[in-house]
Amino acid sequence: MAREDDYREAKKIAIETLRKDSIADLAARSGFECVDENSLRVPFFDRIYRIDYPGFDICDISGGDEAISLQEQVVIFHYIIGAGSASAIGGHLIPYREIPGASFYHAVFIKRAVDPLKNVFGHNPSTLSPLAGRLNGRSIDHGDVSFEFSVLPKVPIQIILWRGDEEFPAEANILFDSTISDIFSPEDVAWIASLLVYRLIALTKKS
Image (cartoon, rainbow, N blue to C red; front, top):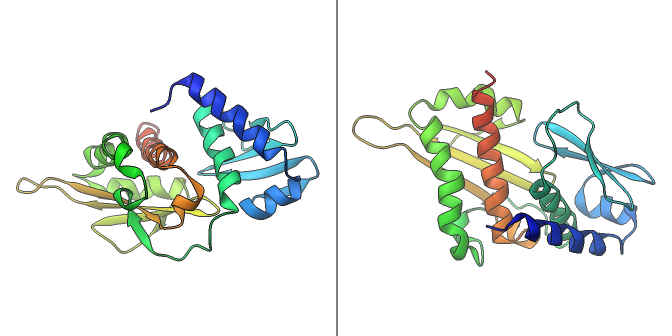
């Protein structure tokens, strides 16, 4: 995965790209609310961020006390850039390995997203339910426990768990709408999936 210097450069390039468009255009293609002529309202998991225009500074306006990581900022900027190319969400779900170009990052995706999900929640999937609700997850009918999260307006992600026992190990899967490849690189998809999983895991420590 990228180093911090790589993320800083990616952020710089993304901002240069975004400054070519008006704030109204950015809002229209991303689905973010244009609060006024100088800012966008960005729902992200359980938080609300504000992006100032044209400086593209990001701040948390929902009362969160954690810093907005450089990786989060880059993913959000990449989303705004790519969202205009995405067709309407069609409900055709695919696993990570079917995302074009994902083979290079597949092992990282498994290590940082799928394995932690099943290791923490696989033997008692019911513990996931109240935590998913805190990240605005919607219960769906797959596996033993499953939820869909609207991570960003055009980015639904589903997580599915099958309970492990003495005979069979726990299993987990993470699915994406097929349009995700129109918006994000495979590396960004792997990162945002791992962010979702680790936010859920972090909530177990606050319960």
